[in-house]
Image 1 (cartoon, rainbow, N blue to C red):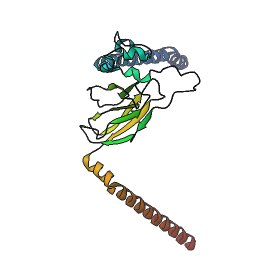
Image 2 (cartoon, helix red, strand yellow):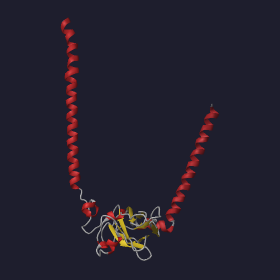
Image 3 (cartoon, rainbow, N blue to C red):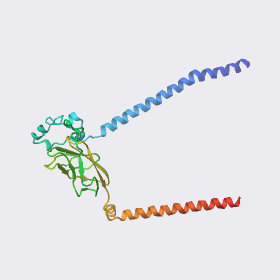
Image 4 (tube, rainbow, N blue to C red):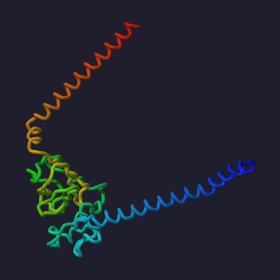
Length: 242
C-alpha cells in the first residue's frame, strides 16, 4: 500500500507533463488549422463575389491603346476621342513644373465647395473649377453618383477662360465627395455633396433648423445650470447637518 501510494503521484506527474501537454498542444494546432482554413474560404468567397467597376481597373487594364501614360498636351489635342474616353487615373497626371516656378498654380473651386442635394436628382448648379485655359480637367466621384456621361469619371476641356464644369447626379441620402484635377494645376480640389430630404433642406435654407438648434443649446445650458445649483444646495445641506 505504501509503494502504490508512492507511485500514484509519480504517475500523475508523468501523465500531465508529457501526455497532458502533448494533448493540449495537438488540440491548439487543430483549432488554429481549422480557423485558418475557414478564413481562406471566406476570403475566397468574398473576393469572388466582388465585382470591380470597369472605371476602377488597374492602370494597365483601364487605359486604352491610345491613352498616353504621361501627360502630353499635343497628343491630347491631336486625339479627337480623348474627352469621350473615361479614365479616372487622369486625375493624378501631373505636368512638369515650368522652369523658374516652385509649383503649379492651385486648381480653384468656383462657387460653393459644399453642396446640398435631394435624393435621385442632379445638382441644381454644376461643379465648376478654374484651371489653365484649354487644359483637361478630370472629375472623379469617390463614393457614388454619376456625371453626364453616366459614369463615375469625366474629363472636360477648360474653355478660353480656364473654366471647366460638369453636372453631377446623386442617388440616396448621404455624403458624396467629388475630386477634380488638372495636370498643369496643383490639386486635386474636393467638392462635398450632402444629399438630404426635401424637408431637411427646406429647414436648413429657411433658418428653422438653426433656430431649433440654438433653442436646444440654450435649453441644455439652462438644465445644466439648474442641475449644478441643485448639487451645490445638497452639498451645503449635508455640511450644515454635520
